[in-house]
Image 1 (cartoon, protein in one colour):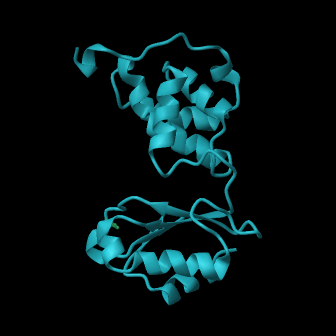
Image 2 (cartoon, helix red, strand yellow):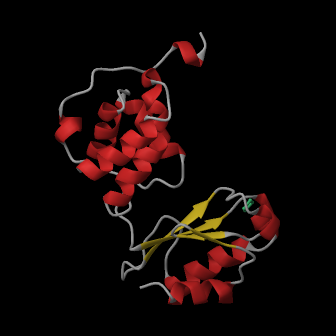
Image 3 (cartoon, helix red, strand yellow):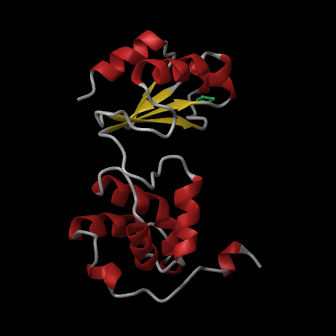
Length: 176
Ligand code: FES
């Protein structure tokens, strides 16, 4: 059976229409849904999760994932699979900022382990943890697609390349 012949349609509860999403969020999700054939609205799941996560302060609750599933006529488990597979989604409360240090091979060869150990020592957080002051959540992430300028770090939505521990400190100092 091809993927095209097997849309993951389920009954959409009314709650998703009037639930936790604001009209603005729904409109933005609808704009992504409109890019796909009606029977493939679940193709918008990643931007939908991104929008809802940003609206919720940087992380996804199970209830929000369920609402995304209902809104896109998907089984909730299919949304959980996406949210748990990709590193940009967080399922627990996060700090005011997110810092993701790439731990894939090019960056490892170019010093990302030094960056990770530096952050652990200086700021007292291990990957997956948030600083005590709530300033940032520290993450190890898979290849950011910036291998040519390794090591790469994602601060919020901004890529930073060829970073040293000192350069990373400067970025962190600029965060509120
Ligand atoms: S390996 Fe780090 S950006 Fe690709």
